[in-house]
Length: 168
View 1 (spheres, rainbow, N blue to C red):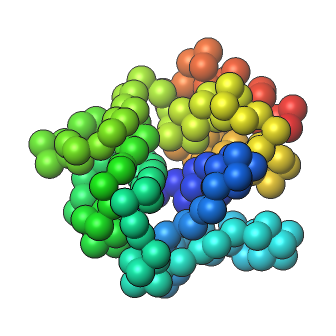
View 2 (view 1 turned 120 degrees about the horizontal axis):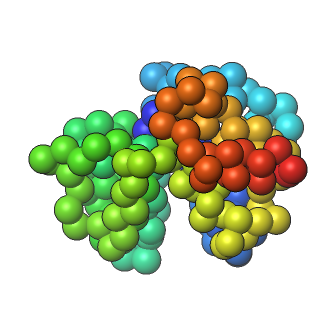
View 3 (view 1 turned 90 degrees about the vertical axis):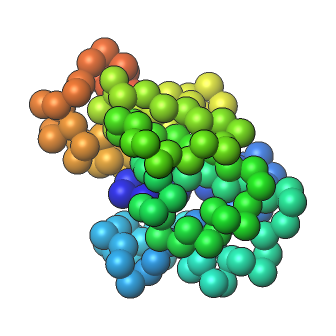
């Protein structure tokens, strides 16, 4: 996952809906160190785990949400994907030949600026109260990063998502 801020917002929404959530990432390789540090300072109650830590708790009811990538070889921990029966993919990159083809939902839109934009649109309708200041700043920073400060691949939807986040 490249946009490490998306899982934070999705985890917040799922937690508000009463689900137990875990963010799985390689803490040694992540580019979101500052964001994770800020989450710790704010006491955001994020369950951040590595692949080997989460493998024992995966069962048939586990839902794995993969964001900003749709190829198993690009995942931090492909073995987590291999163990999950229910997979959702949310991505905005052009589809590659070796895409994840067994997802129960494959939400794929290449016309948007970022996966953060896609998730923001979903959260507006699914659970808008789950987007607090921290989540809004994380998502907005992802939109700004992927769109190169609103220069590339932006449209009305990008600015509507950004306006929602700005209000949060």
